[in-house]
Image 1: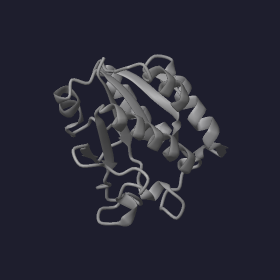
Image 2: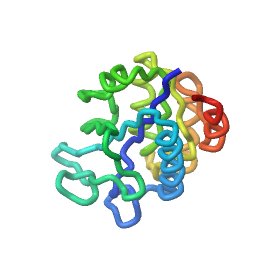
Image 3: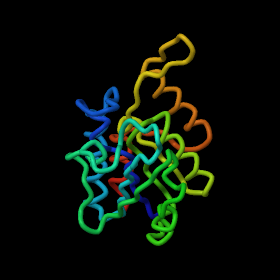
Image 4: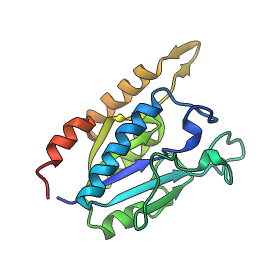
Amino acid sequence: MKTGLVLVDIQNDYFPGGRMELEGIEAAAAKAADLLILFRNKGWPVFFVQHIATGQNASFFLPDTTGVEFHASLKPAPGEILIRKHYPNSFRETTLQSELDSASVIRLVICGAMSHMCIDATTRAAADLRFECIVTADACATRDLRFGSDTIPAGQVHGAFMAALGAGYARIATFDELAREFQSDP
């Protein structure tokens, strides 16, 4: 089964000093970098998704800023596919599906940010398009959210979204689980 890695929005604005810092982003990016090394070593296809904000009220991922750039730990290598998007769903008005089809990918390993937004939207869309999805939970990050007068801690937001995706859209795994599983895959 041909497997592709989709790295979603691992961009500078989500890291310390950025315009939308996420809780646990450095640890998640380290796991995503481990996944990237694993895929590169196997010669499996890798797809980098970059969000570029075009909305009038956008406050991060603004064009022509350092915040919109990929984090130094995870940059595309020559020959790896770059998908630019303007919506949470990495498939909406992009070439992602055609690139995956062109590479004959049928199973996706998805990671990046934010768990509650772009990871959720991308995974649900991929499942609807009949891709087999695996979300690497420890290679994703999010932030605290507000609902009414309550603050929902990032860990609870992440857990709720991983549980929801795992209930019908994707298999949820850790990097270590996937590394063991993929060890025997050609």
